[in-house]
Image (cartoon, rainbow, N blue to C red; front, side):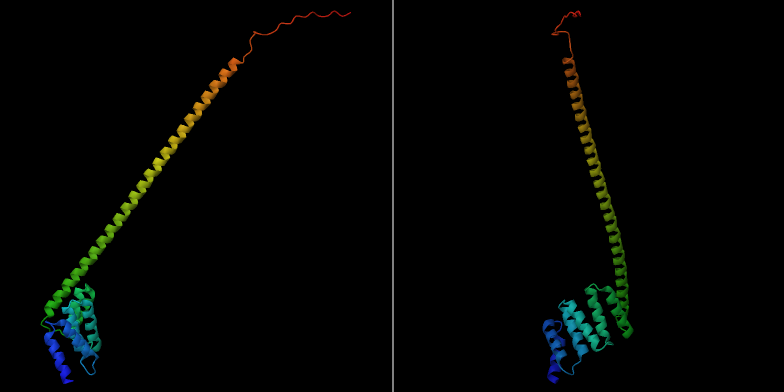
Length: 209
């Protein structure tokens, strides 16, 4: 046990220079009996943070707090990790928990300033989300208006073409009727009877006996 405790202490010393190796030692320590799980997971979280594996860092800090929910350092470092993950509301909650457990911390003023910055950022994000939503709605309505205008123009064009086609059909119909009427009138004139070619028959009445 003393040997393993020495190994963990050595890992603590190497955490900045060799975070990956230190992480392996800390995680191995969590599997051993009668070890300080909250500290081991806390240091595993620190090593993961140095490796820029923020999701794992959050997981290990959470396991540290599962082992001891009053362990203030894990709240602080998990809050820092959550900022990198963009989870600002959760980070604010963790910073608040840290201050509640360690109100006299030398970092208290900086943490309060960070909470203010995060609240400002959240307010900005909400305004930006609202602005984008309103912009999207305006664009949607404009697209709908333009589509309605395109449909109106297409309908008007179709109506004009239909009227033009109907007018052309009516013109052709009247032309055919006029030609037909003219031909019919000419035919009637040609067949009118004259005196030419009519045989004149003379007869005498027979006198009755």
